[in-house]
Length: 116
Image (cartoon, rainbow, N blue to C red; front, side, top):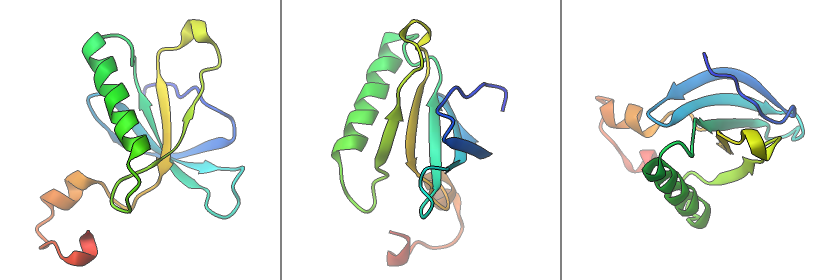
């Protein structure tokens, strides 16, 4: 993965599933939840380095937290930093989806109501 994930020990990283301009997403196992224990954890790297990126991140998290719809990925939790002095990255825990929106859009398969 290249970047160290500094998060709660109750999460066991399974695999890296994506990366983008703001960070990395991994599939993880939540060992505290025996029934539905697969989650996605998005690490937003250096979230406070640039003012514009910080505002975009805050906006994204607010919208994601406030919207409750079956077609919008909801936030399960935001992991707190171990120490305020070294607080650079934000870790957002969400449900693990089968695929991402980019893969669906790029797919040659026509979209149906089942995709929505």
